[in-house]
Image (cartoon, rainbow, N blue to C red; front, side, top):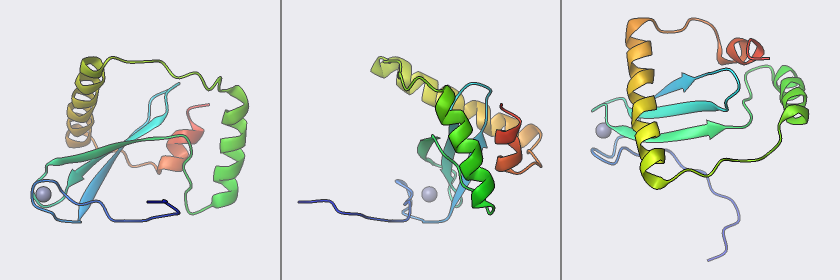
Length: 116
Ligand SMILES: [Zn+2]
């Protein structure tokens, strides 16, 4: 099968719902991570690591992306599977704790601008 281009909605692996909550996690010096949870049953669905983020102001996002691209080495660290899985679940737990304690009010774009 030749894959040309696809788009799809995320489906919950537990209940097949397509309504999800995205928890955006911004840390200085790291790619932005988005943890996706089922809005209906709260099951973990996926995590995305973002190299680029585009908000409702694409020109602003483009300028930020180009600024960051010049600074990144492109070298990715190899992680063992157990470490990767542990880091994922630790991160997911942490993101949920942070959101429950105090959900961020700033836009993702504002958070990314603050990471320079
Ligand atoms: Zn679900």
